Length: 90
Image (tube, rainbow, N blue to C red; front, side, top):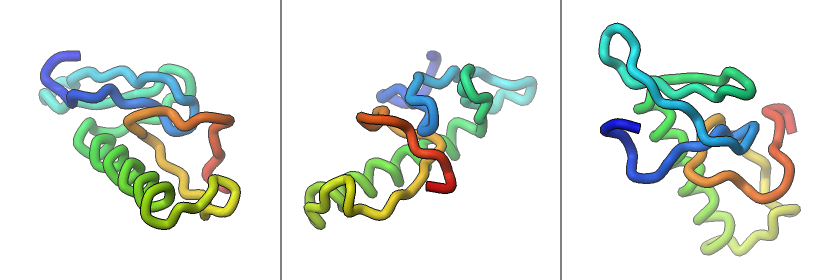
């Protein structure tokens, strides 16, 4: 993984580490080998940051157990969530 984020990114659906590669224009892209979900590295890092902020708000500030929290789906995360992955419609 050359020249990218300090933390590896994972697929929000599958929980596996995504592959990072550059396209012909030099733009870094991420892609999940299992489900095929992909986007630019910039967008994936932004979404992973939003996921981290959501987890922080839910667990630290709101102190909501997982069962009571509203379910928000993130395509890319910094660390896979424990338990089964959620589909976008859950």
